[in-house]
Amino acid sequence: MRIRSKTIFSNSSLRTTAETETKKISYWLEKLFRQGEKKEAEEEKISLQRETERQMQEEGLEDAVKEHSRKVGTDQHILEDMIAKSNRILISISSVFPWDFFPDTINVEETRVTIIQRQLFASQAHSVDIKTISNVFLDSDLFFASLTIVSRTFEENNVKIMKLRKKEAILTRRLIEGLQM
Image 1: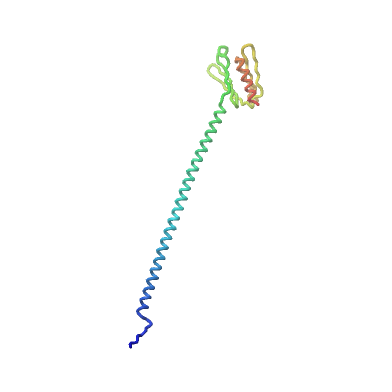
Image 2 (image 1 turned 90 degrees about the vertical axis):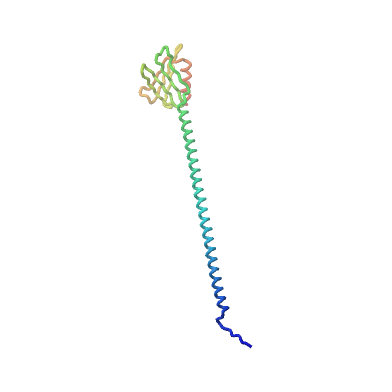
């Protein structure tokens, strides 16, 4: 019979050590590969987040620009309306031409009265706020009337327009007094 001798360092243990080492190496390589994949996935996720943030900022900027342009448009529209209302003439009357070669004109607007007095080669315009008019006097005769507007701000304090049509002068006086209230 043959006795087999057992040695501590046998060939099989060398094989198992080599296998163990290869397993360890493959384990670490696989782990490194998975870490690389995770890192790539995280970087891709971060880049997607940055891209969506950038897109949201661009959209926010576009929305802000649209809102600003809309607001500027509405502000401009409001301003145009205010200008139109401030220059809206309610009534305009002139002195009668044949008796006055250079007819004077009274324009009544919502906030002011403009008196234009004409001469040969010149004209003079007075604008009086409705709030500063203290009195409006109407002198009438058979065919014509004259309006005297007394203001608190003029140096001369009153402006008189003569040779007006009687009905127009009465309507103008009533309109000015109505706007004062």
